Image (cartoon, rainbow, N blue to C red):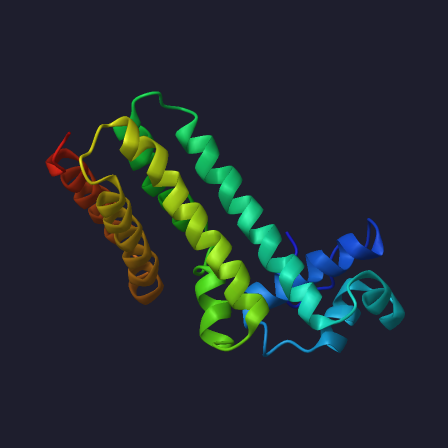
Length: 195
């Protein structure tokens, strides 16, 4: 396995190599800490490759975060696809996060880390908003299928609980936090008034 200090695997297009290097370095050390020259060196490409492919660091950060979002989206959708019952599908969102946390290479939410580093960066805020809306959308359809009388209220509560477990894990790195959040979600779902 490639580590954050070893050069990124040197196969693939310059774009692939740059994105792989950015993912390794940005995730391990932070988007502000890692300079563009370091990403270029890690990828083993010429500086011109970065600028012709991404235009600069901002667009590379965007591509890195969008790739992380797509990976998260695929993981959540895979967990939800295992279930038909809307309640189980809602809880599967928390199961997908438990899977991420159980991975030894996981050391926190990349969107939370990037947002914390770049509070005013519009690129980071834009992609963070995309992933937050995806979280709400993961809950919305199945909450509505349950016939909850105030669907948006429960969607908001589940999204807030999900945000809380992401931050909680960041602070404690404890899978018990994730299982407790799932249990709390089940109680919220079961107690939500139906139409």
